[in-house]
Amino acid sequence: MEENYAEGTDPVCTAPSVIELGAGSASWRPVNETRPYIMRLGSKHEALLSALLCGLDESSRINRFSHAASNARVRSYAKEAVARAAYMAGAFDAGRLIGVVDERPTAE
Image 1: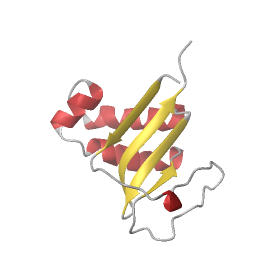
Image 2: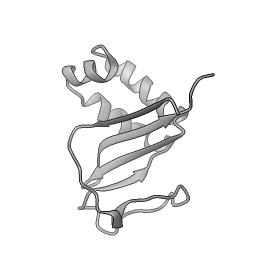
Image 3: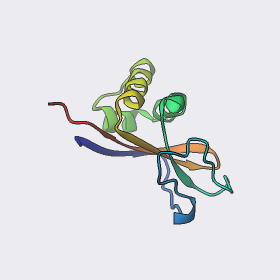
């Protein structure tokens, strides 16, 4: 795997009882969505990822993209990221995406 990167706007603590570890539970939802939880993301979560990344301030965009990426570039990145990730998980708090971690295959 080429890249291990965590992106987020708020820190989160997640109890093991609310973490989704398997890929086979697409309809999985935590019992209590008011507590932070982590779940696997896929192409249907592109808009959430895009909104999270577009919400970054200029300094955070420079840290993340090495330049102050435009909203159009960020949306394009989000679309590509969900399509190419070998695995992507999102951290949610009160139903709002607050962080993302993903692994992408290496280019050979």
